[in-house]
Image 1 (cartoon, rainbow, N blue to C red):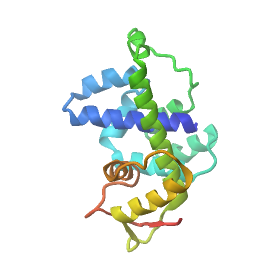
Image 2: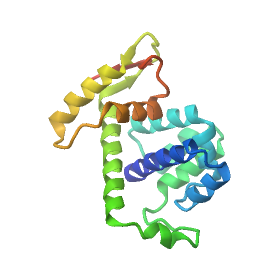
Image 3: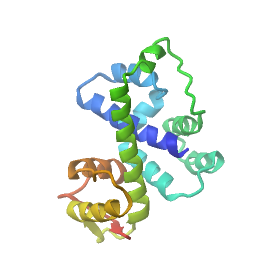
Image 4: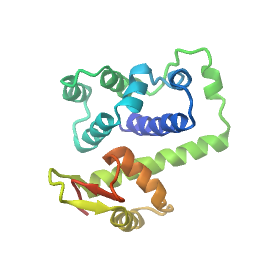
Length: 194
């Protein structure tokens, strides 16, 4: 499931980029269906971002990623987008496109595949940083500023990886996606644990 979750995070970013380019919801849906993101998932991402962020955080924290556990965890929310997300996360990694345009998707040049792979790898590592070094709390007095996140990320990253540390803008986008919007470049109800 980990690789599918990373793929999903990448697809969320793509979906948000299309939305910010003023694409109509119909055009976004048409393109997202090519990569198996159905209308329920698109609606979840575009219309219920706080629920999606909570779900993604829960998936990062919860260590039991069995289909039954994930499905049961979100069943009580009775949300078709979450049901579709569970299906998406547990579908066979060999995606079956239900679209005649699948060949267009498969014909991507090597440069864009490498770029996409690099972005996915960065998100996987940022997810790992989030799960290892950030803890959500019920105490809204606990805050972490973007600079503190970035300093901690630099220290953590340089101790583990040879690749370049993501820039502050990329980190802020990632944190906003996973922890919600910041207030004055600070996130409330979180603390650093590493």
